[in-house]
Length: 228
Image (cartoon, rainbow, N blue to C red; front, top):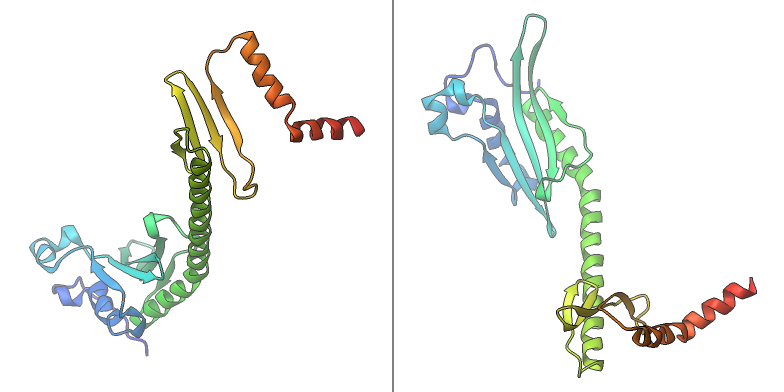
């Protein structure tokens, strides 16, 4: 028979509280060797006013590769005229408290609660792996952007370029005149001007339009459109 918390009467000792007992049992599990197990209340506070603090909640902080998963376990004891609820409730969160789409699990026994926690960990692993893979891709992408910006600054060594965003640099000729240049690893030899700010005369606008209009890729786009 599975060991169940005794709730015939409200516990008068800290060590009789269901989550306190469960926390000690979790410490004996092999998978918990790297897990931080924390109770929301401490024994001293509970003994001063047990009815105010009630049963403590368990927070399990489990490191996984470069991520962290957090599992909360609380004891639900709610007695009413029609229902009696005495059970552990297991909820999951991930790093930065982002909710994971795993429904809460419940169990009325210590063994069942530990088993449900293990099931929850297994369910979390795919989403954790996906998040880690995403972080790796984002890191590689940022490294490529940084490398491209560094290369552009090297090629335009007589022009001062300031980092603006992750994928762009800015040439600021004066407080009112600037040009923002974006880099893209998918087109490593081409750069995009995403912002050109300043006041220009008609002659200056003609020069800008001439540069843009005679760009080989712009010419190719016009010819392609005309041929359709």
